[in-house]
Length: 406
Image (spheres, rainbow, N blue to C red):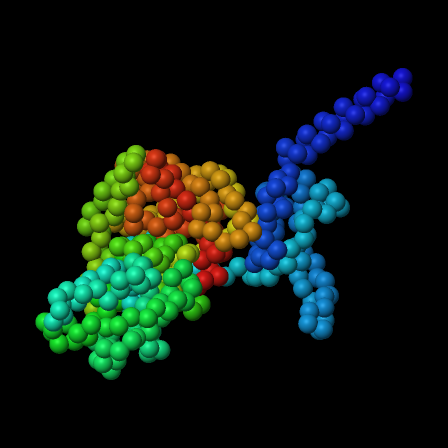
């Protein structure tokens, strides 16, 4: 009898643990960051919709902690199993749920680089024939030249004047490569064809690109777009920005995406006084700046709340785009949402399910990066990449990461 009872208890416990394991996303909870920004609605959704499992609840409380010898009060969000077994506690900033205007329209970006980008080497025409000043020098395509003899470089036109002062003497170039500073000594050569000293480098001080506006903050007009950086088309490096401008684009055509062939939005924008805002940041999670003219960029009646990454889940969602000529919402499915402890531009995997968008573009195409992703009426992310093997699928970035950079 005793053996039967113990065996029965064992079976019951095994079944209990299987039920709990199937209904509690322990890995997702453990993967949550130690700090986060949430709204009261986010906490309500976690509890009512069982985002982390049917038996997991979340609650906010305050704790007094010592920081630098001073007492501070911190807000904590605790996840518990069955309401009493602690799973994880994180520091949170509970906001009221700021609203943003939804983007969805293509933008043109014109950037002035911080320093100049090295795109290649060249020989200098001297009295003794063509010479290379960079022989055996550790300069690579994609390096950013931002100082010559400690004089900061703002554009290409500066370089001949700085080299003229060197009078052909040994010169120190300061470059950035992978966020690390390196210095290289070179001796400029006099180019007899133009009478100027040269380094024997091809360099560029501007860049441009096309992407989609994600949001504009309704309080301060700060915008976020693209969801990934603008890169130099030859070297592939993230363009360091000194300043820039954004322009509204005209969509002149669409190349549909196919398996193995990324499609694209063919857009045209004219630089000039018709710019819509400035650019001050180009980073791994998008392009950011101040919108100075909202006309044609956003619908003042279309403002939504921000949704925390903690509440993004697999299931139905919407993608906002103006590929049809007007801003529309299209059906998509979030296939996978990763609870990333660290920022990444591949936060979620999405699939386009809307027949209208599939007929227009074949799915996700170049130029749609930055298209807003809505779930439960909240802005939760933006499109960043397309799957080459399947243009109906792509990656998205959480809007949390974009807001931190905006």
